[in-house]
Image (cartoon, rainbow over all chains, first blue to last red; front, top):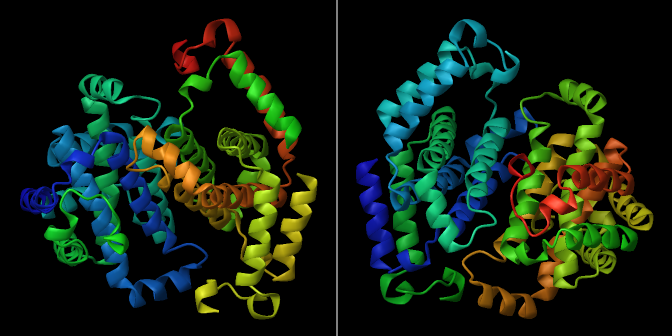
Length: 112
Length: 112
Length: 112
Length: 112
């Protein structure tokens, strides 16, 4: 992640783009890229999705890359350690969804 | 990233949740988490956003963690190497946005 | 629509909320409400969706109402006649998707 | 609204598209159209937004029309009376946000 972060920041700073990156607009980018990813699976049944993934794996990977690009940039600007943030979240979710209760269940923790 | 991926997959498999993770719904998760992140910055001017980030840094970090969790899971299921995907995307964008043209400009590449 | 518009504007003006309604944030509201609506159908197969619609019709209707509320408000602030805008769009789409070509096809117009 | 609904349904049925319109995918359409609308206001300050609205009013109106198209279709398929749903929602919100408390305040009802 550190290596990716450096490359992304260099890409941005080479172009002097940091001046445009305010929190509201960079958060909007995250949403826009996430919906572009989702669009790949719309109007398709599971069979068609399977085929689409085979045919367009590179395009779909690019969309995920776009989302990750913005996740990393947002975290960088807000000074958030993503590795730690995910680990903390996993611990928190492990308490919300204890294995014995959540196993094979797809109910929200409030209804477990 | 590899380490995080392992931890996330273990979290999911401990709960036997893989059965629920079809591409359309996991893509929807990405969108939903991205909008929760965006919500932090709505109805606030730059000054208020700055204060909000100071006051709620942990909450905001959790939202980014949620997005990254789903980015990693989606990539894992689709067998996409995120590190490589971002690097490829940066190269592609470097051609779309050559430094000499894009520097300090916030125009889409089609209008550069 | 006119009647609804009046009621919505009265609701907003009674609370003196117009001052907060800038285009970026009211557009974000549209996205947030749309994702709340989508959330109702996530993690469910067609059978479960059918049941959910029966059980939660009122809640789901509320989400659609929230979206329409923001559509109407956004249109009002931008001085856009929604009735005319939809009619125009239907005409435009009728040309993009001529009946003889588009019938029973779910392909984008660029691929018809 | 009734008139628009009829026109939209005729447009869909002329093309025999109802078969593709399951609740999850039509809800996704709502999200996708809402983000296209939002995209108009990204990376712009209030001054630039004002200018953009003047320059692109027709395009922006089309995006709102696309959202309304899907609001109406979703409501039609779920048999929801939009007029009534919005009126009910306004009454509910009037109780959550009583004028004397909410006037000039932009706090969530839980914090009023």
